[in-house]
Length: 171
Image (cartoon, rainbow, N blue to C red):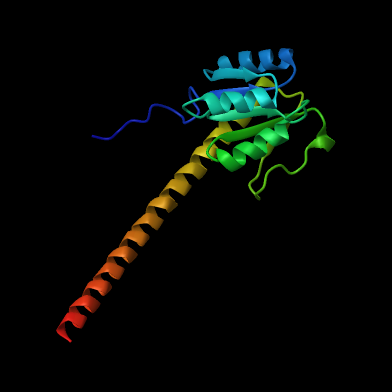
């Protein structure tokens, strides 16, 4: 029997919206919930990192404003890229000149310039969640392949060691 997919990877995804503006968080929440995303909010980077750390399951996406007081969105993104690489990341900024390269690697980081439409938001969220899922699947496959190669190497080393011991016993 062939398994039927339950829907797109982003369907019902959990999104953390991080913005210091209450009204913006509300708009983003309503827009995303209208598309069946589950949404939690954080008023700043510190609150976001605390929420992320307290969860047993990671968020599918963190949507963060880049310019906030205290721990800003750039720092949230850098922290998550390092410690939670499977979480999709999407930035927002009202300042096109204030969108620097974010992150310790060459991995692309998408930033939406405010203001944006609900349709732009939906497509960006869908795309970054899909891309993160694809990258995670590729990484998991590479781990499986590497493990198989290491297991084969370990068996070959053990066989070689056994042959040497048997040869030494004969001498």
